[in-house]
Image (tube, rainbow, N blue to C red):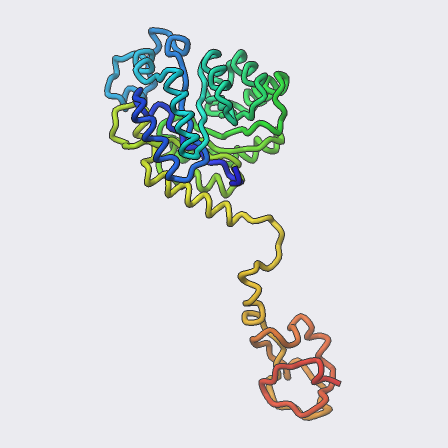
Length: 340
C-alpha cells in the first residue's frame, strides 16, 4: 500500500450471515478507496457459551432481548469456503482482505490466506493463548485496546514480543468499546500516551457516530484507521446502527486522504505554491518623503510597504544613518544602489 494512513473498512458481521451481502460490502469498500475490508471469522460454539447474554447494544439493535449471544452469532457466521470466496473477490476488486479470527482454527485458516495483518479484537487483549498464537505467525499485528488499561496493553505487547512479533510489526489501536461510543470517552490523546510508553505505531478503531473522530485521529498521527460500515443502517444485525453507510465511508476516506496530504514532512520551509507570493505579500523599505542626494536617512524617512523585492525591513538598522546617493522621490522602493 502506498498510502501513509491505512484505512480499514470494518464489515465485521454486517453481512448478516449472507455471502451475497458480504460481496456487496466488498464492492462498496473498494469504491470508497479504503485499503482493506475486514470481516470476522469465528465458530460460535468456540467463542461463547450457550448461556452467554448479549451486550445491551446487541439486544437493542437486534430487537431480540431474549436471544442468547450464541444464537445471534451462529446466525451471523460464514464458513471457511465463504471466506475463500471473499478473499478471491477482494483480489479481483483490488482491495486487501482481512478478518479477525476468534478461535485458533479460524486464526490459522485466515493466516493460510496470506493476509497482511492479524487483528486482535479488544475483547481478546487478555486472551493469552490467542496472543501467543498470533504473535508466533510472523504477520503484522493490529492490537485493539478497547476496555484495556495501559498495564494490560503492556502485558499483551510483551506476549506478542516474546512470541516472535517484532515491535515494528505492531500497531496499537485506541478504541472505545461501546456502540456507538460517546464522544467524551474517545480519549484520542491515549494514542500519544501509548506511542510514548511503548514506542510503537499507533492507530484508532472508531465506534463513534459519523466521520469527525477518525479524521481527527488521522491528523493526530494515527497510522491505521478502522471504521465499521454497512450497506444500510436499518438492517437488523447488531452492528448496523453504529456503522457508516457507503457514501459516508467514501466521504471519510476522501477526508483522511486530504489530511494525509496536509500532514507534510514537518520541515518548515515555504511550499511550492506559496513561493510565488513571497514578494507580493512581504514588504520592503520605501521612502516616506522626497529626499535629496547626500541626505542622511532617519527612521522618519522610511516606511514599510509592499512589494518585497527591495531591502527587507529586517535590515532597517543597516539603512538608518546611511546617505542617499541621488535625489529620490517619495514612495521610492529603496535599493542598496540608492545608498552611498
